[in-house]
Amino acid sequence: YYTDIKEMEHIEELGNGTCGHVVKMKHKPSGKVIAVKQMRRSGNSDEAKRIIMDIEVVLKSDCKYIVKCLGCFITESEVWICMELMDTCFDKLLKRLKQAVPEEVLGKVSVATVEALAYLKDYHNVIHRDVKPSNILLDSKGNVKLCDFGISGRLVDSMAKSRSAGCAAYMAPERIEPDPQNPDYDVRADVWSLGITLVELATGVFPYQDCKTDFEVLTKVIGTDPPSLPKDKDFSTEFRNFVACCLTKDKKQRPKYTKLKNHIFIKKYQETEVNVGDWYVRALESVGDRAAIRKASSPE
Ligand code: ADP
Ligand code: MG
Image 1 (tube, rainbow, N blue to C red):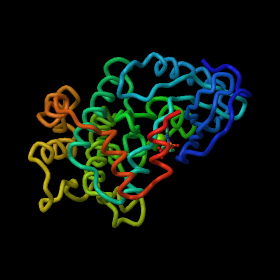
Image 2: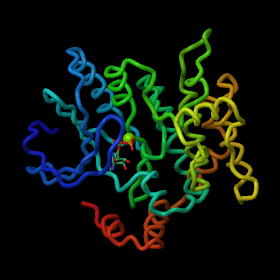
Image 3: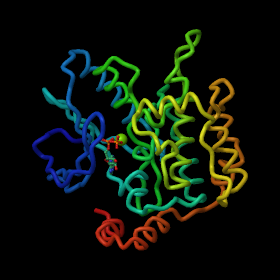
Image 4: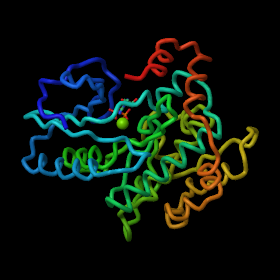
């Protein structure tokens, strides 16, 4: 799609992560505005080949719950991954709103995430490994999409050669303390991360917020009961149960996607219409975020 890096014009920074940053850019010949993830390269000679193979997987991905990848640039020192531009992510949104996300919106978030993760596993044999609010994007049309799978995970692997891909705070117990008999983690690690994400979005606060260091978080994940939705708040039984299933500490007891897709919370929100776009615009209005509202109502 995009062939000449000189045709790309920097518009603004969208955010920083552990393995790079994301920039809003314009493709000058077409006028199209997109998001570009820019990462430093490790310099390993096989790396470029692997990145291209990964990108091919993503380019072929055709799932409405996955952010579309539009191609990539590989220079001597950097890899740029071009993707469709969304309005924001749930991490930024939560910080801006400083209030919980309603259950019905989280119903749609759960459907989108479970469908996206199941699709990646079934069609591309990819495990995400970094499910968290900043990797769940949304727009004012009400689309909810997952991003940052496969490529970034494998890239981090090739760079660091470690198990450290992913954010400590959302990491499943079996990734922190692998079973020596069965050290590989599977899709269920992503299911745990989804559970933590839902508790955070449903309450407005990160469940291990009192911890001062990553080490303290990891110790708590292993040593205490899993987080759950607070009893004094008004959540449905289905939602509480769905979160409890995702946050089953023993990975062997934790459901995989086939089972999750049949959970009544997922079934309910596959069928129920929720106007996520409308909620998003109203939520911005309620905090008086005029700049964001303008952007949301006039997409490029
Ligand atoms: P992290 O996900 O760890 O926060 P990233 O570098 O992956 O770090 O992303 C940084 C920020 O860029 C995210 O918080 C997200 O809000 C934003 N972002 C990423 N991809 C897109 C996209 N396709 N459209 C709009 N914003 C994006
Ligand atoms: Mg990300």
